[in-house]
Length: 519
Image (cartoon, rainbow, N blue to C red; front, side, top):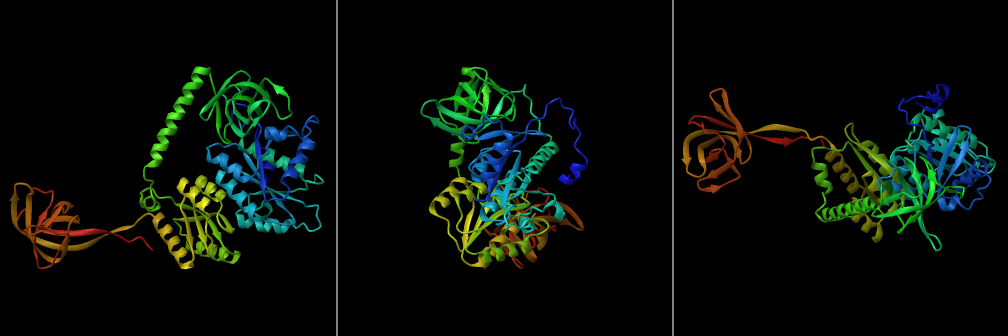
């Protein structure tokens, strides 16, 4: 359902009679530099957070809670979309909703495209906030038109993307944005059991000279309490203190609560999952098991990786090919995208997750790793560090100087992802004129090729009159004492096959399976 439909028919209070209570949505804000992400967060802080929060503690906790008429909303204050995807790459789904901020006077910019691509790769609902509508040069309709290029079709254009015009300076539209966040959260029916086992995700961590290691965590399930033993990555610790986003020391924290934890011996990585242990002994056992698992994984990575060609040749073919495009100019980029649009078939969809001008970045490699995408470059070259990162993560990164070479690669990708179509084609026939019993090779059908040819490993039918008495393959083929691959019309040969009832006068009919998949 779109937001328009949902506003008319509100989700029932007991949409899911599970007994598990609802939790607050966790929201991240992304977008192009200078489009107003920080200003929007600051406005929400000032108007929706208790007066005690003067702007100091949020930067440390990495998140804050905003109280609205629809309930609590948690905002993550992260460095940007690459940090967001870094967390996703580690298997953590920390955000429920992504807000993409676009300036009304600037429209879609490179980092806007990247932010949208990262949010789409994470498969989280997207709300677009068109900021700076108070400026004289603002053009909201133009932004809405440009959003269509990113597969974000606004509701008033017949799509299902929620678009809210706002001004972080005056506050216009901010209430509407918060209402839309609450609406999307309501439709998603977000729930978490405060009585269940605790789990959370690290948003950020740092080392304080006075206090030690501080980890900023979003509680996802259960309740976190002071005194508990926690395991994160290959480290464990005991919770010595919990601090909420207002800077208050608290004794416990339930689902969707951002907290700062004091108690770890080493700084955990953003995206690491935090779980509880009954005691120190169990915490050590969990860490030991993870160390063993990591070492096994490292050994497995040393083995040869499956190549793209091998993946394409596997039976379980992917129907959607994710691509990240980089080119030297906007004109080249548009031409390549035009070619891709014409090349994709009903069976194979070419999904361009990100298209940008300039050399690929390590952020592109990170996105490609998360979304299982390929990076294709035209007239631009990746730096050594980017190539190294791609190799380490097993990402296919290819550069082209000639457009036709790129087209050939696209054709190969499409064909490799299609279900192969095979057709049985007639090869030839031979008459069995003598049956030879060999002590090692078994029965050998001494035959004369009457038409076409016989090939080793070809499919074979044995005809006796009009009846097929055997179907199998040619396991061996000889000319005198020599093993051969093929025998043509007019020559005699010895044929090995797994059939013990071969008789003189039988006819051998050979065929082969040919790949006739459309190019």
